[in-house]
Structure formats: C-alpha cells, structure tokens
Image 1 (cartoon, helix red, strand yellow):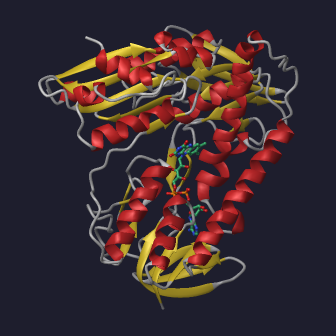
Image 2 (tube, protein in one colour; image 1 turned 90 degrees about the vertical axis):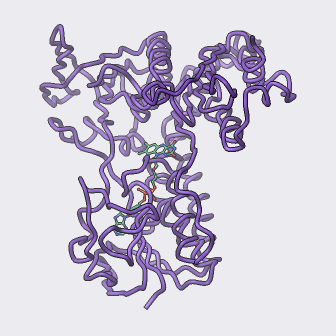
Length: 454
Ligand SMILES: Cc1cc2nc3c(=O)[nH]c(=O)nc-3n(C[C@H](O)[C@H](O)[C@H](O)COP(=O)(O)OP(=O)(O)OC[C@H]3O[C@@H](n4cnc5c(N)ncnc54)[C@H](O)[C@@H]3O)c2cc1C
C-alpha cells in the first residue's frame, strides 16, 4: 500500500511525484514504458518542437547576418542531424527527471494503469500488477485529436508527433488548424523551404489571443509566403501515391489542392479512455476529469487530477503549477492560490506571448482600461537581432494605471513576457515601471519606452 500512486510521468506526474516523495510520502509513479518518461512535453511536444523551431528560426535569421558579413550561405539542411541532436537533448533531460524521482525515492513502474476500484490500480503490460494507495493522482495527459473527416495515414497525413520522425522536409504541406501548434509548425516548414498552406476553420489564427495579435501574425506569415485560408473547411481528400489531394471549402469557392503531406493540428484529447474511471468512481465531462477548486475529483475524494487531463489550459507550466498545488494539499502544507497568472506562449516566427487579462475580456467585463502599444521597429536591439517585426501591448486600468495584461508579438516575446508576469503579480502600475532603469540596448527597454510614452 502506497501513500500515493501517480498515473503518468509527464510534467504534471513527475513534478507531483517528486514533491510528494521529497515530502516523505511513499509514492509510485506509473507510465506506459520507459520511453514515455517526461510525457508529451519531453518526447513529442515542447522540447523537440522548440529545438526544431529554434533551428528553423536560425536559418531564417541567417539572411540578416549574411548582410553583416558572415558567410552563412545555407544550401543544405540535414534533418537526420536535427533528429539526432533532439534525441540527445531528450535523453539528457530524461536522465534529469529520473534522477529527480530517484532522489525523492519515488518508485517507477511501467505499464498501462487503470482503476479496479476507488483506491486500487491494475498495471497491465509486461509486468502485470495490482497496487493500492490512499490517494491517486491522475496525470495521464492528452493525445492528438482526430480530424472529423481525415484519419492519419502513415507518412502522408500526420500529427505533430510524426513531424519528429520525418526523413525529409516536404516540398509542400497543408497545416490544418491555425492554433499555436499549427502556426509553430507552419513557420518551421516554411523556414526550411516547404510551400505551406494553413487551413483554419474559424475566422482567425491563434484564437486565444487578441485580434490585433492574430491580424499581425497573419500578415507576418503571409509576408513569409505562407497561404492562410480562414473560415475554411476540408470537405474531401484522396491519399495518392505521391501525396494527398485535398478539397478545401473556402466559403466563396472550393479548391482542390495537392500536398506532399498534411499535418492535422486541431487540438488535443484527454487520455481517460483506458483508465477504468467508472470503476474508480471518477466523473468526466467530454473526456476530462472533473475536479473541484482543490483539483480533487468531484466524485472520489481520494483522487486528484492535474495537467492536460483536466479542462485547464493545456500547457506544461500550468501542469507544473497544478502539481505543486496538489502536492501542497496532500502534504498538508499551506494551500497555493487557485487563481493564477500565467503566460500563454507560441514559438512561431514571430513569437507570441500574452498574460493577464486580454483586451477582449476587459471589454466584455466593462472594465475602464487603456491599451498602449509600441512597435519593435523603434527598438535598436530588435534590429540588431535581425527581426524588428511586431509590437508590445500593455493594458492598464485608466485611473490607477495598474497593469492588467500584456501581449507581445515579435522577437523573444516568450522571454520578455515574464517582465509582465512579475509586474502583474506585484500589482505594479505603468508609472512604477516608467521609473525603473532598463538596460540598453535590449528588447526589454521597449516596455520602458511604452510606459514612458505620453
Ligand atoms: C507539439 C506540441 C508542442 C507543445 N509545446 C508546448 C510549449 O511550448 N509550452 C507548453 O507549455 N506546452 C506545450 N505543449 C503542451 C504540453 O506538452 C502539455 O501541456 C504537457 O505535456 C501536459 O503535461 P501532462 O503531464 O499533463 O501530460 P503528458 O505530458 O501528456 O504526460 C502524460 C503521461 O501519461 C502517460 N499515460 C497516459 N495514460 C496512461 C495510463 N493509462 N497508464 C500509464 N501512463 C499513462 C502517457 O504515456 C504520458 O507519458 C505542447 C504540446 C505539443 C503536442
């Protein structure tokens, strides 16, 4: 009998398991096999995707540094080397996670976990076993969501997972879905020479971001030569020997286009189907485990759920925070805040990041606020870094100047956003920021210029 069983060794699972183990609990963590340690994030999400994207953005920036005198004529790209290097990174980071779990004396078991009753777990696979615990934390994450019409077809119609297995950059690719992951891969393939189209069902890209961010992104992607079809729908397709023929309903017309590959990126589904949740008396809604404000199952008081398996934003840093909250609760420590301020990040080129309240949400809530915006074009460091596209936007209360939210599109947006993370948490005003000294020349001083502008 363990104190706690954790199902899934992704960011949510390994974080909660190591915190609980360090806190003196006897903990067992289960994942399907050794190759899954680190979960989606490490093996087929954040880490490999960002290594791929960083490489592609380097290729893109090389044009500027060539103008600065560096002979960086890039006429070849070796995807095998990128994959090899990415796998080395993954191995390195996996070792780190295993070390952390070992230090916390967490027992690791491999196999597929499912509930037999409210506190009993069956492990299936090579090493069948039945184990029990006082508390169970479900951290089984999510997987690719199928397209209603198109099934994945080996090497031709792929999900984000198969991008990391490609043996060559396709000559042409259709990305279905203009959310964060779709836009990231669109710029990856474009930078490395593919002809790229994005087909998005809704009227805009990156639906969680403000309209001005989505519009600027569309313009920047189009400048790169990416075709974007908004309000479009795939109504038919035929897999052929040398690619996929896709029928696209573009509203005003229907087009039939041929692509080497199609990438489906329309969201993720929670991994709950195989968990035997009925036996565990764990309630779900559309596949997500339903939890209360303390992340405890609403139907089984011994069970918690965290990460992509609950309907909070599917981000690794949100999963880490939820893991910390549940660990604090189980260890009887001071509860951590339920309401949080966290950045949303998209690593396409240009990058996007936002935090706090959006302009749309503030308008809907009738808040008296002002939006201030400054373009990277006036920033020396952006030019030095070879990309001065995009802007920084700050949203503040009209009277007090208190910072309510921010959104950035452009160079290193995913790093700069953390200045607003601190400012919003510390309840700073734009006046407070304007009295601080920012280093020159930096991308961050754009924020000083923005809050100092009259
Ligand atoms: C292409 C891509 C790029 C991404 N980029 C970012 C990014 O830049 N930043 C960001 O914050 N997030 C990013 N994400 C999202 C991020 O990967 C997830 O939010 C994060 O991995 C969720 O962590 P988790 O622990 O909840 O689940 P997961 O990481 O999915 O881990 C769940 C684990 O549970 C295991 N499991 C499932 N069922 C069972 C079972 N029955 N028995 C045993 N084990 C089981 C799985 O094998 C898996 O290892 C990206 C995702 C994708 C797909």
